[in-house]
Length: 179
Length: 291
Image (cartoon, rainbow over all chains, first blue to last red; front, side, top):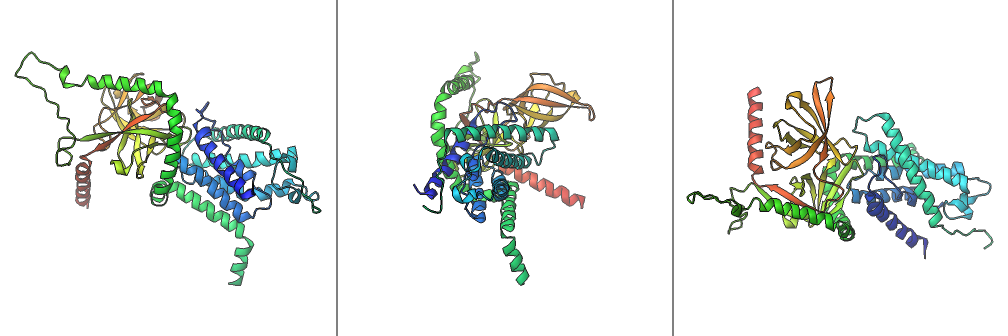
């Protein structure tokens, strides 16, 4: 299956799972809304151009916004993490090993456990921080509420992402020049 | 000029990012006007279809509760039947005029509210801006600003209408407000949601003379041009004294259970136009007088 088709199916699945299942999980607590859909952006290939990544982020965010009827609420954080992703990857990847050219996309096998977890945690925290901030922008709530909500949702999302990684391991071949 | 192009090329990604961000923020905060024009038609048709499929499954699990609700509502309506009232005095007759539309197809003058049933096919409770989606749209007579009432109480207001689906701003939406009164002492106020728990809404600045007690019922009041009067909104759960202003802030349990809602009624106030027109004229006159 070509990579484009695979990504299109993945896109639809992520949006549907988020909109129809995770958004309908009865809130255990007012802090907790599990988010998983933005993992699609983290799974995009290394060599995608930056404008293309930004537009993918916009499309992903708006597709979810069509379901929740909050046009722009999820799109804005998605565009933000799409913009920040290349910087985070540049910091985390060891240039000498040039992982970028040997593997297709960021994953545990291509980056190693620790860099991959840092990569996921940073972008998840940024996504949720921005999302919760937009949600509470016109609300005179206290600051602790904001912090705790960001931390709680980040924790839940991180758990979900790790489970997803373990349940659906993405097999990636090591590519060399000789092949 | 050349420098500008060089600048744009150098910072193309950053500029693109800023433009897309601005677009997102703009469409989020210009909520109504913008999305109505651009998205409502097609996007609502697609998400409505998907939501409906999904709801077919979900609906099955709520059958029992829905049944109970409908039975209860039936009982309430039976109690309003004309045949229930019988007077020993045969000269006294009770009439109930219930025909909504006359033979010419126009709505009758003595009818104020028209009720249309609708199935709920989409519902969110976990965000700050919760909405519902109903399987009834412009083709079935739904218009913007009609209100939605469930079997147990107020649900929300229609904000967006597609051909066959409509979007409801739920009571659990931070921008939604309902004019209400206390059932016991008739004091008026406004119910809003503070975005904390989908079980509770708030009614602030109730004067102490209102004599509120825990468990009191809050109903819609007669002043609203949209909501029919005396529909339950919530029940007082907690009374908090605002010491600086000397008023009560009430925490209400919502009358409608937003976790399990399956059916709702869209209510149209047929006489709304006249009321709004008079209000507008009155406003103009007072403005002229002030000048």
